[in-house]
Image (cartoon, rainbow, N blue to C red; front, side, top):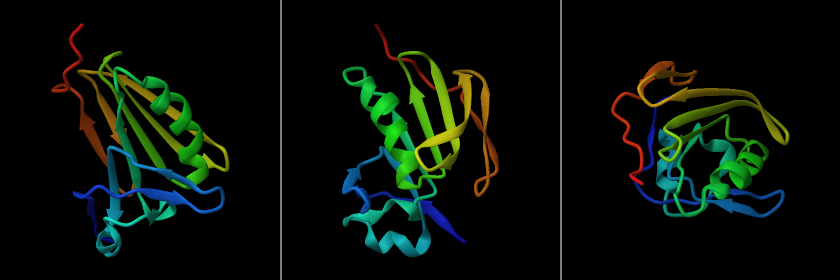
Length: 129
C-alpha cells in the first residue's frame, strides 16, 4: 500500500463518539489523499504526529493520548521540544496504547511497520526558554 503525508490540513473523525482531531501531521494511504480537506475517518490514518505546544501541552499528552487509540490511530508520535524528548505510542487496544517508547533528542527511535525505519532525532531543536 503506497502512502504519503497529507500536505493539506484535514480533520480526522471518530464517528462512534463524534470526536474530531487535527493532528500536526497525519500519514494517509495514497487513495485517501483525495479526501483531504474533508473530514477523514481516523482508522484510515497510519500515524498521527504532534509537536507539543508550549502553551497547551496537556492537549497532546492527555487528550490525544486518550482519544487517538480510541480513534484507531495505530501509531502516535509526540515530539516535545520542551522536554527534549520524543515518545511513540503503539499497539492500540480500545482505550489505550499498550506500548510506549521514549527517546531524547540526539538519539534514534524505531518507527515500526508499515514504515519500518529508524528516525534520527539528532537535528531536533528544543524550545528556547
